[in-house]
Image (cartoon, rainbow over all chains, first blue to last red; front, side):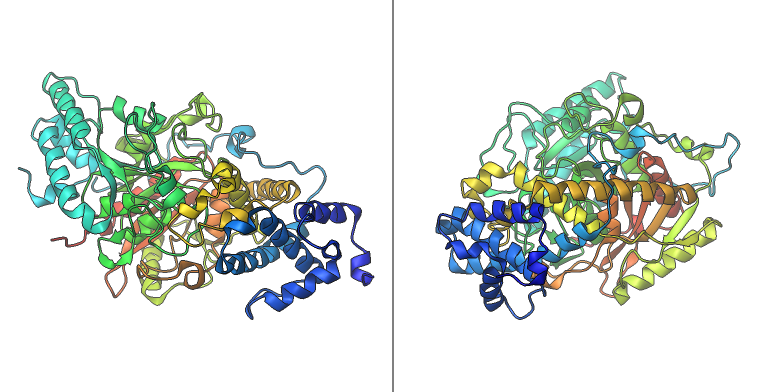
Length: 139
Length: 469
């Protein structure tokens, strides 16, 4: 059974992990769904300079890897698979930092169709009598 | 035929000669074509030269000018366009083998704008495959091979507008069009010692340009001076109903004339203290000298700091997710295997795995930093730092392991869609160019141009060019 931190996984987090793993389910043994069983093989296969991840983070990384291998494994060489393992692990700390950043329910997504200047900023004032800081001396 | 010096004249200087009929656009175009044919391949600068089209456009320009119909400062001026901009009937490869035979039956809005003002397209500039969206480990990640820096051909131009940087730096065209999702105009401009403008997001239409990360992609000029960038930007900026990312008509257009600066406001400059962890010693010296110059001419220069937060993480996830969506069919079909770079062949598979919730969290974080930056620009009109903490790197460098450093200014500037300009500000002890970067508030492109122009009015780094034989 999972340890204390694993048992604290929210339903949403569980659902997300399950979604990651679902694509791999046909190839991966069902025990892969349990975080503690996922973390072990990942640790064993990561290079020495791989980022240190929490068990949850390791589980998430492994589920991503399995999802990729399930879908695309037959077109990947062993070297590419090793590279994917590394990339997936390196992608986790930025994700953790991003998720830890506090955002409120009311914070809207910064969508590209509405740059901030378009939405709410008035143009910067240009003093009518302002002198230039310098006069260009050439073109 | 024009002499060697003609190749390094600014657009403004060439325009004066063309308008006064002292310089023939046809002769100028032919001279640039000859030079590009001779030197271009040595630098892997072009994806393709288009001499027939160039001469046709040059002849049309010359005819009009002789008849007294002068269209403006880009009329008869030869340029190169990054090979991710569609030009009707010509191959547009996006720098990548899977698209090597791609031909569009329409031209990008930017190309149409440049046609309208009478500019002459010499060819398509080489680039990093798919503008680097899939990641890349080596400078050779391009259908055309590694772009060599005209200042030292054992060094790289930076990417992804690598050919655009090499072309302007080597005097193979008067200007080039580049694009930036994150760093692809600013870095090659700095490494190649040219002036580059990354406009505010949405100011220049991307219609007909390869989409990498649609909420971050921008198109801008690379040229010999800030003033040239302003003139080119004026020609290509504006709302476009074909690109829903463009800002409205009243905020899109840009007009420029040197006299505008006589009425411009005194800029409040913030000198960034935390843009880079450290600068390479060869870079630090010119940057310190640039700071002294700015302080001499702007009494308002004060130290400023970027907000601290996971802005780069947000930017990385936005690029990764949007790029995976942009190239979904390529990834799913396994044709990423045809890309040159080993990292590009696999990173798409990893990028496909990010969740929608994480992407939306990144967008929320973007909204927060947009507001924080807007507050910072209540105090400063322009913030300044080194364009890059290093100078041009060796062609063989493993970029994934040996060129890794935090870039909060690039991350923030690009996820917030802020305008930026890199101008040359000196050289390292190895004679490699160093760039100074100005970043302004969204929509205030004029402020970064004004800052660059003022800096260049008191320095002549932008007039230096490499010795090419």
